[in-house]
Structure formats: C-alpha cells, structure tokens
Length: 85
Image (cartoon, rainbow, N blue to C red; front, side, top):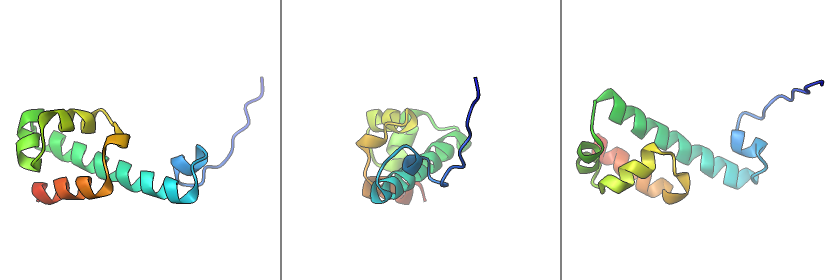
C-alpha cells in the first residue's frame, strides 16, 4: 500500500475541511485553551485551584483540560487568561 503525503496548510482545522473563517476561529480558541492548560500545569494547580483563579467553576476547568473546544468562546477564554494574569 502506498501512502500519499500532502503538505498541510498550517491550520489543521482548514485541512479538516472547515471554512477559512471557522478554521481561524477554531485555531484561536484551541491556542488559548492550550495556553490555559499549560498555565495550570506550570503552576501545579488543581482543577479547583484553577477554577478559583480563573473565576469559573471546576467543571469548566475539566472541560478545558479535556479539550472540549465547543464549550468555549474566545471571549470566555480571554477572560480566564485575564484572571490568570
């Protein structure tokens, strides 16, 4: 079996078939979620600690670290980053 490789566009969401606008929006949201998850890990925060710091509930942090991108808007993620400093 021969495997064909294709160079990616640089945006995995565009490569998956999302429209250009949707792909950019998803890329921004995923980047913000990654940064928040890294912050939690770097500071050794529990989900409860992170929830208090970010001004949200613990289930929201659970959704964040599990990558449930559909549950977050850019605005909500930026607000959490603001709380993180």
